[in-house]
Amino acid sequence: MRVPTGPLVALALCAVLVIGAEFTLAWVAPLPDPYAAQRRMPGFVPSAHAPDQLYRIVIEPNLPGVEPVHEGRVNQFSTNNLGFRGDDLVRPKPVDELRIFTIGGSTMECIVLDDSRDPSRLLQDTLDEMSEGRQVRVYNAGKSGDRSYDHLAMVTQRIAHLQPDVLVVFAGVNDLMAGLFGVDYLHLEPRQIARADLLKFLAGESQLYRRAHTAARRFRRRTAREIQETIAFETNYAEKVTLQQSFPAIEAPPRVDLGSYATNLRSIVAVGRAAGARVVLMTQASTWNSTVDPEASRWHWMRLRQDGVYREDLMDAALESYNDVMRGLAATENVEIVDLAATMSKSLEWFYDDVHFNDAGARAAAAALAAQLETNPAITSKLPPEPRS
Image (cartoon, rainbow, N blue to C red; front, side, top):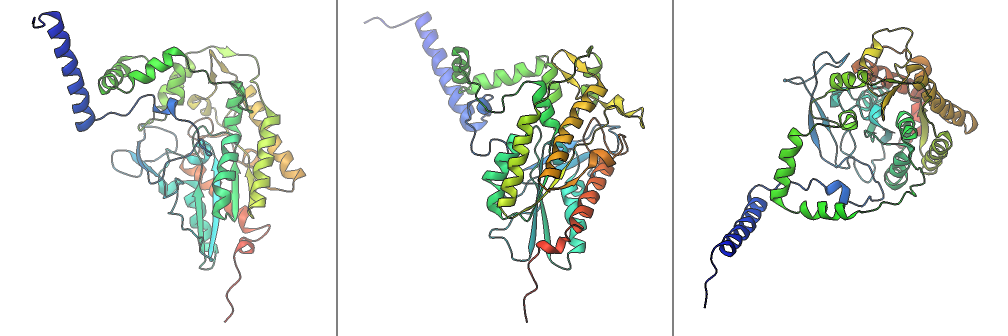
């Protein structure tokens, strides 16, 4: 009987070493699958923060109006037991709790602002002082990139079951961005899984491949879209600004999809009211096309799309068309509205970039909401009556 020698022995030895390395790495120091998000099928709520998370966000120097709270220029962003920003949510709801949810995209989420300076926390603190000893709890359901259909899913599948008393809807800019990319609001676009995807997913099962993939990403040049849309644990807005400045201007107006936005917004209002909540809408303010702060445009990065940069006046007009849809709905459906776009100046006094609040902007937005909720009708109208003696 001949004993295998040469190449066969080397091949068998390599196989044993690879298998051994895989088991050892999986047991001792496993890395996550880089394609996990692409494999995952969306649930009823396709976009939401995970519960009980804590992120430490390092704030870059000179970001307008954003002051880090912790050592090392760090702000903290955390989620509660149900994935909302705020205190832990108690179920069933206490009889003396006024329960408020705020929904929106990154402009409501305010991920670079510390938990203590989140507009929803500031709103809670303000209303708590007015509530004569009753509990006011404000839960921030905002999440970067979420559009009106994400908000609708969140309200129908999660918030409606948590006995909301007030629902604040701060939406618009991400629907504008969806329009720029021609997003299908009916979600009819088929998702084809190519053979290359199957091979990629198979390779993603290997711990050795995951390490090679991680190492390669460190040297690969990121695309413009990746730089724009990646939320890092260390902010990179100056890099995003520089990237936008390197592209030519686009003279055509951005595409909008106002009909789909109106349908989703109307549905959110209807579901909120059906759940017994008082609904308050809030328009989206920006620093685009500012006439009061010439420095504001120096911090713009969100007008870059595809192969060019949309003009400020055209983006401002497009965003106002979404705000007008919200204003029209408020008028026809008798919905309360806080018109920040009409009252908040286009200045770095309130924003650190195109649309996101800095510390002062978060305080101003919270104050505007508190003033609306305090009156018309009074905030106490949603609180249970005092128990009889």
